[in-house]
Image (cartoon, rainbow, N blue to C red; front, side):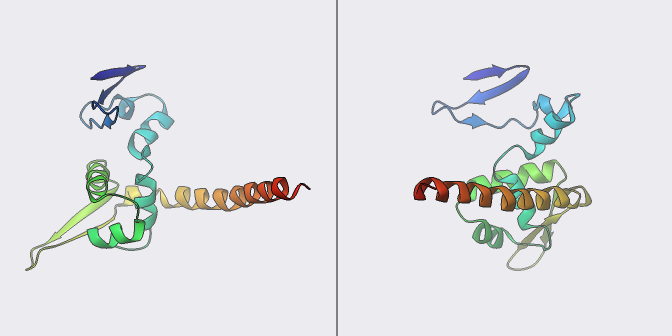
Length: 140
């Protein structure tokens, strides 16, 4: 099934799951910088992958273990999309057994300050939220 959300075409599975369509991603060509940015970073996993690779190279299994709670298929799809968008580089080594490493490109490294700012934002406001919840529970 195909659904239109504004000018954005979304293909849905029978289970109402979105099928990403990298070729027809209109948001990447929008005049709005937020729409263009979110077309690249708009999944919940991509920022986590970028943050995980912020200071190191990693193999697929290392990424999967570091991130946790992500299926191997979703991780593979996200890595392919990030590679397509030139955020990460997939480096193949012609060895036996074959080895592949992922690392951030310069374009990907430019996102690190944004990811770091998000962690600071979370530190500030998750503590505020926790304190408010504690006050609610204790009745003060």
